[in-house]
Image (cartoon, rainbow, N blue to C red; front, side, top):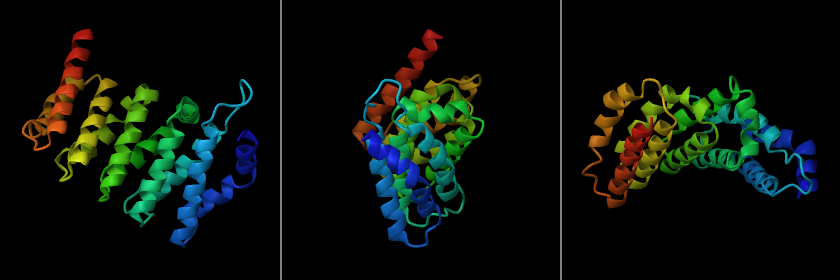
Length: 231
């Protein structure tokens, strides 16, 4: 796998990214995204030699700006909702391991705001599956980059709260889970943020028709209370 990944990275990474960003034919963009997702899967396997670079860092640094230009702007430059989801799925794969976060954290002044723009925009996507995938990526950011995520809370919180009222319970639950992780990273103005913005939105979920979501709500609020006691 390492040899295959290295070959693809040297010879096909740039052309694949150009197809994803610029090709006018939807099927070509789709195939490029599927190929890239498969390559990321190979890169996630343990390296053959200790200290060997899997290539995830380089690919993440190259892919994030492309993702921002395609799905981090209004209106979306990527018109096909399934391909917007596919871009998010590549991000999920890239950012599921510490190696993928290396370039984001080392140059967070540039790359983390790109990621934040993508997530904030995709949380307003009309495609429910894209909303849920964005929530999943946000959860990865809370796990691997809590300090950087804290600086982007004001950008991500409003669209996230908006999804708590979505008609699909799976979207509401994904948004609630992501909200819990977003607020777990802390903030100097946490008390005011929760009181003014978060609690009014959560009150509506107390009587939500989905029992799994009500259970999730109890867990999220309990986590905040425990965190407050520890601080």
